[in-house]
Length: 149
Image (cartoon, rainbow, N blue to C red; front, side, top):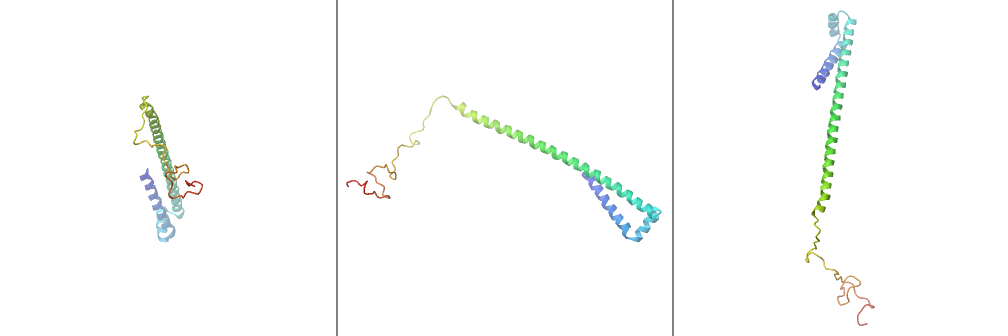
């Protein structure tokens, strides 16, 4: 289709150049008039050729446009189909991931080891309820909380 479209476009360009040559150069016009028989026959022939070429170009453009639209629609359908497959695959993976932890459970409870488990309560000297035996060196004690007064 592309080759036919290019051929019609080339024919239209050649016709336009020939028509411009006939209309602008008097010697060429007289030569074509002698071949056609009269000026009216020459212009009528140019008109018929122009109508035929214009119709041919319109037909090829419309057919090419229809074919391109069909191609785009087919590709859009393929893209939507692939998106649907991807969505289905992702949903299957999510369901499989949700089912995996329930399949691992055997009914036994495991506890973390001693070295990984934090020890609570942890003393923090910056807290107001910290022991007085380890005062915070950054915050000086006020007179009401000093021992021995």
